[in-house]
Image (cartoon, rainbow over all chains, first blue to last red; front, side, top):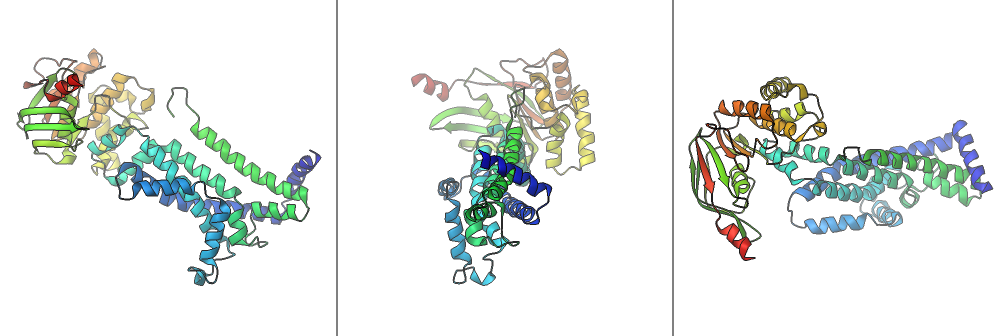
Length: 234
Length: 204
């Protein structure tokens, strides 16, 4: 218990003292995850909507694969990305291994199934009158898509924030394809693992607490967005 | 404008609507009546282009984008009443300012101008129905398909809506049962009779 208390105090000291390594890792974690989730949203929202609203060949396989993708361990994604980006891998020539961009690609693979599956579920659960009303009022495919996303916004936001929470706290991908290089690819999760490994429990815990604060903020946002309104509408 | 002959609609192998003969000339207003389960709503959905499993002759001489169907229980999009009435106009390429002016005019004609800025989830059933009608009428469609448009409306609402409908040039089909329409609103009445669907259901 004492160790945990020390960890909290150390976390406060690090943030208050603007420790450059900690703030650097925190900032890196945030921008890499934000970029990965932005890309996953750009792909997952149209794809999830298209899968929910139309019959495509192989649709069931894609949905099944995406559902499976939600449960894939991050170390597995990390190993796959390592195989892709290593010197002998198919994407070796672009030299992304041990850069933040490699972590971003890995996190994109992690976030995409989450955004896609939750968007698919949210749009599929919409009242059928949404699409029919938009269609009969003359809305084209783009306007109809925007209407689906607007009406299913609670589910869609839930998917995006869940993906962000998963990315910002993941360790396997950042460790394997990022390499935990100081001031280059070190994220809060890899820094936590490193400090704990070095026996700097309080410092490791302090990093973990920062990670926890970010994850909790996202969770509170999810709760606020999905909160039922008094009239029963969400 | 409309020419149906021996038209049937099936869902999961069961006939849910059957029309032996129905022709409607351009500009006519026709009341559609019939007992529950005779396929009145399905008929309007067919004419709106929302049903796909249609067999028989079904000719509608109006482009898909010029037909508007107002659901029995209209769906309003999240947002304000004004946004909803502007939705179709914007979808038809009308500029924002012009769409807003037209939308406000129609809200005014239906006596609900004061609801323009109200969020639709704060409105009553009758108010929501009038907004859905304003949204449909604002498009000035060639073919207007209304599923029980006067249900839930109060006396003032019925007066406003029927006054707007009398001025319409659009070919209009109105489901008029169980809610009866005021005299003289429609040119004639088409009764859907219990055909295959009802018998199918009874035999199950």
